Image (cartoon, rainbow, N blue to C red; front, side):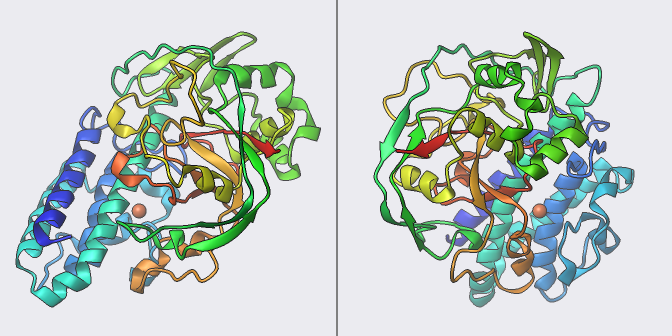
Length: 414
Ligand SMILES: [Fe+2]
């Protein structure tokens, strides 16, 4: 990217974050309803801290906007300081939301100046870091929405983030499409941006397999619940069963009700569960138990990428404005809903590809140190910016996490 392109993309991404925060009150933006879900104020500050720390602060004569704030907005980068505890981000009434916004404006002005005036060598060295910062902010745009959803859904008044469009669906029969096995290559091809965890390209041997034509629906999940899926230990991994008992899981996160009467909290407020919409906010443990109940399994990330590598990344992503997984209107010709709607749990542990090399310097902490006890999710969700997703993209969360827009696609052998 040249200077003008980088500056323009930077400005666009920063503006989008502000637009996503616009429907919120100041009070909405400071609450933290669980350790994993950060306040909107923190997301707005943290993404700003990222640019100030990894770009502007490396420049001579840079004066920090307010260096005392840095530990508060450092997420997990031990090499640049001691981060404030994640679970305590919602205890900070200062800096205020308006102070964080002033910080954003100041950093944006300095970044614009840097893009225009940095000498050639400095620009070439730091432009890739700015690009990582832009992609990082896109990740936080999705997190901002998932975390706001948790804040609003935790409130008995069930406030809406904003009104959402209603989506009418049609029943689409579940079908499996067969794919050949063989030696395949997955990973980022080097065209455009990719994270270090998508590299290098690496080979996998696949047995012939079949992939479901669509995502698992809420109606199918209701059938699992009616068949006592949450009460049958034989369907669950031991750790999942323990967790499910401890947390008293009996339905996806954000479902409330009993029998056939279930309500769901969405970013548009609470409404009845639509049995035709993709099920969302389920953990890996639940997805795995459901797949076993259904006589199927979760796809591996190599199988998923084998199918999607040649597909367009179209789908119900952030820009669609739905902010909720949508039911299908018509039966697909092939495999559909691969991008957008919900992140799809895979059976693959989040591990480095053979030959993995982390980003250089402090950004080596970005991905690599989380490659333990997490599972890979693929495909993006209704909260993922369209520019952010690609076939090789590897998202990852612990197996019990369910506050992300995470759902299920089934696979099986042929
Ligand atoms: Fe971050």
